[in-house]
Figure 1: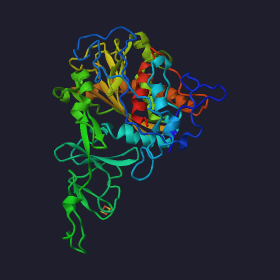
Figure 2: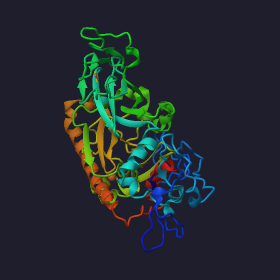
Figure 3: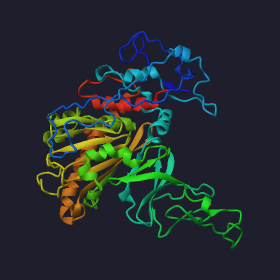
Figure 4: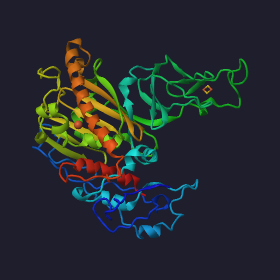
Length: 483
Ligand code: FES
Ligand SMILES: [Fe+2]
């Protein structure tokens, strides 16, 4: 089984990270290693690039509360060096005889080093389909992962199929207007149940033998199951063959699933970010944040690994060079970075000016959110949030393959600003402004992806100041994938 470890640069005798003399087996793929449980990443202290954020909102505190405020990363050194571990072939074997895969502890230890000296994730982390499969098992499935926006199934009976990391899922708005998520497969012969977004007045019908399910997943109709005209069968228990439900939760119109079923309750999971975005995420505010009825969503597909766009979203370093228009409104010096344990990290600006252009009062304001503050938390693993006094957007990443990703963006406004035709032009300007920003980002993300084909790139280096959020995410990933 493969082990992703840093390559050695031919002729230099130095491994990535600048440490020499660390002998690695020539055939890493054949080396079985002791499987070690993943640890939480090391937590770096919040560091501001520009001025401190204003304190008008108690949840936006100058010292950011970390979900894990004191735990330091400790990837314990193997009790035996890798060469000895290589002899323990029985260690970590699965019941099917295969061996676990992951990043070797030595590389993870280097990734966990001080930012200015740390190793970055190797190229394979951005190019390998097997690595993406590993991420599905170890990054996405164990936690709460977002699969889309609840507003895409607005009415009871609306359904939307979602292919997430190769798994067919189905979002359903049930009769009580609650969003449920099921495996999108018929219990009979495994036909994909719903292929396109569509509305079912009462029951979801399979196109193969016409079995029908209630919107809560209960199997109701099994035509001719006992022979022509006999729709029941004594040997078949309908109650045992409903749709297979997945743990799901909706927060800020985002639909989350826990594929493994073992994550903590969602409310506990999201608490750290819900506190920070209290002005928007508090249930009492639910009715005020509404999805834009027009000019409110976009989809962008790009040739890049999903982690590259996360890394790009986390840091403000590239702002003056990639987003000149944006930088003219809010400079690099106005930005700061923040960290929320193993839940989120991001950047913010103390100088937000409405992207809609000259009309600064185009939209109503979210109560409790400071006029000049914008924040862009990345909720791990795959959600970006943009918070401003006059609009909010959320963006969900769908990894389509190791080298291709889809972004779904949805914009929200306060009250009638979401659908009033009088705000149509301002909504258009806002969406187009963000489209330009995201397309500018795509240019560098695709450039980084192409760079991952170079054997001369060994994970790169981090600025100890400007790249801290990027390094933070590398640690988040690496510590979940360590062998
Ligand atoms: S596969 Fe769905 S009814 Fe037969
Ligand atoms: Fe950017």
